[in-house]
Length: 295
Image (cartoon, rainbow, N blue to C red; front, side, top):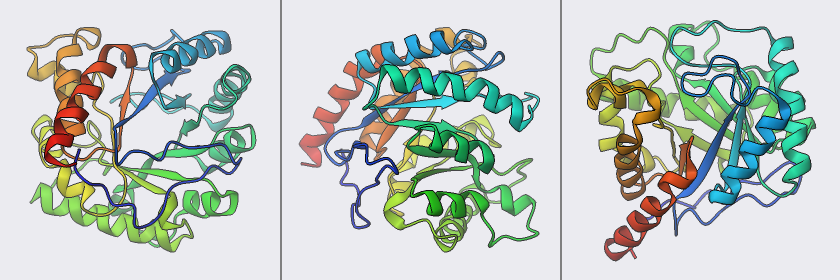
């Protein structure tokens, strides 16, 4: 795979738990567990803590390096729930997963600092913030302030910062997207997050047209060139359904596989997936091929 920058060092868990750091040699795999009633492809399947635990165990058995646990749907058109409800769903599922998988890194998928703090204190290792980059462009009242970053710095937790510019109306998408990333990275670092604790998610499927989403995958190498590990999450998303002639989420495996190959080849440090077993061999093969060009 393309050489990834490790000049900033490697991320560390606030709990001393080992986080996977060999992404320069292979593409890591993040397994998705949605403890929600309304996620777009598996809503309600893992809402009960026991079901979330079983799914996490299955994903790890299939080869997941990290479990990403969310308790609020971020699908287009979904209604936000309150922090209390998000925590009511999240913490029991997290505790169940942590009990079954004490050594597996867990990221918490949330945009609320209070939810992230409760999750870290309950045993999560990583904050996956879906509103970290781009949102402040639409709401620029205090573009230097980043409360999630201040929290992460205080707790010693890594941040996966996703690009998500609400109601985006780009004039020059790619240049404005890169500008958002560089401004967002600067803002996060200024909040106190160490460079080694920051990853970037380009936000495939968030505030972008299908064509813009596909451009992200095609030009992922330019994002990786910013010097931070990149998480790519394309799994089952609607852009793939459009490409595949309207196929529903569970029938988009071929599109997912194509994105896995291109992501691995073009510099993704980690791929976020609903189905690890379906794509593990694909990613392993893509890594082996790319290493012939980028040993």
